[in-house]
Image (cartoon, rainbow, N blue to C red):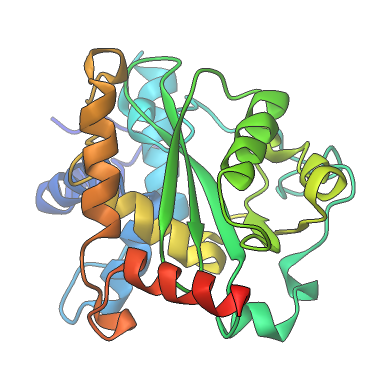
Length: 267
């Protein structure tokens, strides 16, 4: 029997088992509720459900019935938090935050190299994350094991990524509003990198990194235990990702395009 909300009516997902099955399957594959709802809206004949409804169901099940569905979410929170009275996420804790709407058109167009996006890739086991960064034009990605999600640790690992790249290969970086990116300004102080932040609940504004994490999930599903994964295997996953031809790159690989761009910068 379907469980009922406090309002007395079963949730839409419990009234539609096939829809629930699809939502859970895509969550397990690493899709966010926004991606699931957005994709369904584009598929002819597909069921429709809002991402807020998906979040609501997950939080309801986790909070009311001591469930674990929240572990399938990117942030693995079991209830909403850090919200203002009017329902908007707070961004005031991010010092020197600059909106993506102030990002130059040349970055949006992908007509120059050196503009990146970054996010954390979470796993089922607590305390396991990968920091993923991707260059927007070449789609070349970098991975780094993230032991904690503290802002200082993330800023230091992003700095290590930048230092490993060719000179002038990173001019800007775009993030979401997670507190783990609240020390983004250190990238500007250390390397002169400009930083931009998406609107809240707008993952499509950094669609490149969202797509990258989705692709990496094929090799690194959420159930992966990073402690048991040899470093060589993680490096191989990244190599496969960067050596796979892409239609958007005229079937060149991210590594090939990145190399071309790097050579162009040096001439």
